[in-house]
Amino acid sequence: MITYGIPLLVLATTGSVARTGLVFALGALPRIGAFTVAGGLVDRYGSARVFRAANLARTVAALTAAGALTLLDARTLAATVTVMLLAASTGFLSEFSYVAAETAGGQASRAAETRAHRVQSTLITIDQTALLAGPVAAGLLIEHGGPAAMLGTLAVFSLLAAARGLGHDLVPSQAVAPKQGLSAGWATLRSLPMLAWLVGGLTVSNGAVALLQAAVPVIVVTELDHSSADAGLIWSAAAVTSLLAVTASRRAIDCWGLWPVGVAAGTVAATATLAIAHADTYQDYFLLIAVLMAAEGGLTVVLRTVRSYLIPADRFGSTLAATILLLLLPYPAAGLLVATLSATQLGHAITAAALLQTFGLVAAFAHLRHLPRTQK
Image (cartoon, rainbow, N blue to C red; front, side):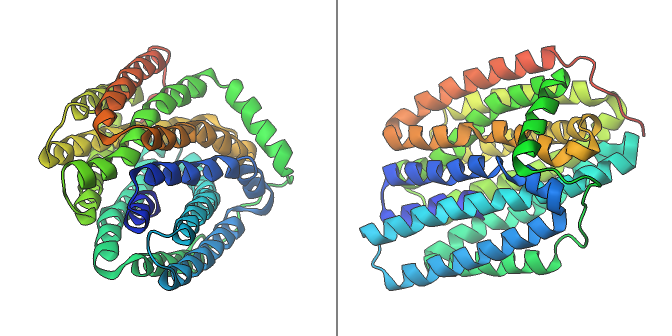
């Protein structure tokens, strides 16, 4: 709801394409900043404590913004500042809870040993199931209930996550200071060339996905003359195909291993992004983004499985933060690009991003032919 709902909220509140792109960037920049401390805090204080604290803080932020937007007139400077602050704060807090949850998932994957990809596919299935409802719910809530309805719902889910989340803390025997933790994460990533190449290729691929996430709401609403709910429906439908792809990837990895599945998913992702650049109807965007996100689901299973195999347990949170920091770098750039381009120029930008995505994935998987196989 945060990733896809906040851009729709901004567009509904400000009515500005440029501000939508700017807020997308503002939401990503604090996410990047969060990883300078999140991994170290998780390694030091444990997953459960960080997860609960982040969700409680996000509840407060959503309720505060909902109250402010109820009192303010839409499309005023005060309303714009409010949604910008909301984007920054929710982006920042979301990454603390994400690192905490992924660290717990990494421990479960290590315990599963050669069946780590099955654990990761199950965790991704949980994520994608939530994404089925999130984007379309955000669009419908904004369209029929206004920003306060959407933010109130976000607050409720954040509070439930804090209350029902991770059951116990996963604290290593030796505490790691936040600054040392991030440094250890970078050092660990540099010492693992296989993981570094995979993260590098997926960072370039994320540039294309980030641009689509920032641009598609603008294109659908302003160029194709569809509603915010229609824009949200695209991503909910994409979550369905991604969910199916995650299940299929688990079985495919059982049969053929990580590398062939990763190559196939990367090929489909690059091809779909190139096709999206030339789409001109709502139906085209609907179908092609579904295909793209299915491929991204497969790539995510590969990344998380390799990550769980290679990263040492005592530095998992810090190294995870370093890898996600790299994967998030394209998002503020994508938001700023959308803010500076007109809607008619976005297709050319998507084409360039698709070409970079292709080259990045080819380079990455060319260096990953010796990915570990898994067992049934």
